[in-house]
Image (cartoon, rainbow, N blue to C red):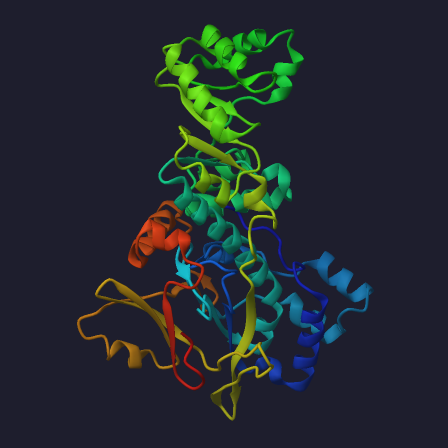
Amino acid sequence: MHMAEHTSLFTDRYELTMLEASLQSGIGTKRATFEIFGRGLGGRAYGVTAGAARVGTLLEGFTFDEADLDYLGRNSICSKETLDYLANFRFAGSIYAYPDGELYFPFSPVLRLEASFAEGLILETLLLSALNFDSAIATAASRMALAARGRTLIEMGTRRTNENAGVVAARAAYIAGFAATSNLAAGQQYAIPTAGTMGHAIVLAHDSEAAAFRAQRTIAGEATTALVDTYDTLNGIRTAIDVFGPSLAAIRIDSGDPFATSIAARQLLDSLGATKTQILVSGDLDEAAIHRLHDAPIDGFGVGTKLVTGSGIPTAGFVYKLVSIERGGEPIAVAKQSEAKTSDGGAKTAYRRIREQHAIDEFSIDPEAIISSTSADALRPLQVPVIVKGERVIDDNLEHWRRLHQESLEELGSYEDLLSATAPLLQCHYLGPGTVKV
């Protein structure tokens, strides 16, 4: 299990400014409910949640030590009274969220936090950063996995992003269908299979391509992948088969036109007797490029830049809003009314209803209103407990999240429906005060 890191200052300054104001006014102790949701999907048919299981670990490290308190005090960010509050801070509330791998749609309440107003307030940035990044990666990875149509996908994006982000990106991609990662830290922390053999530097460093391949064969044998495009791809293939023999496991091509090159490579490999040698392709691939290669003789893809950077993924766009606050001893629904940025008040519970192979998501401030109308429909809750009264209750089981993701996709329709649709494939009904969202 991934160990908790120190996360208390992974926040924005204005959170602590609001915290101080709430403590002074007395509102900080009131019971409150916050929710995370997104208003759109960036032109895609569905989104994939990821990060909920990590939230439990992140909050275990959300405590303020002497160094934190000294920094906040010396820089006049907090008063002594607020520093005293932070010195004893331990999250004691509850969090319910869509599990990793689950699908979400516009206005899905992917996370619900129940705690004091002060507790919920200062966790906004940390929770949003985890769910926004992880879910964006998982959504992009899921779409790439659909486009790959069962062919192997290897996550190779660490060198294109922050070193810590690379680890959680590998985790999110694995949940959404990738088979392995090149990142050893992700392999160690999350037991994700790792993959990788050689790069161009080792070929360039030797006197010849053949010498580099002989060095690789000494340590890896024939069950390895030869990088064949350093100089001339087809000559590289001939050299690789000459050195490794026709039982070479795979070749990797990292440049050129992958469609035309893979066809020529397959023909050459077969003519050399290497009929079982697989072809792996890498090099700035995205969902569209993988889709265009569906008829090419390619067995797997290495994906990095377009998976982990903004060039290939629209952000999840999640926001964190207060939906309920205690007044007069009772929870009162509150909602933002700003133009184009409205929210629905009240703490909502979410279910997915399957009716004659058609799925509908329903959110309600009164769960019994959904359950009592179930009839013969299949109905399942979408939110699972992550933290209950301050205690972490969720286990980060990546294999379970992978299965959940595949099962959730199967509920929505065919491969073509999932990949080609640009509008949400699933209707979302809000059963309560406010407007029905469809």
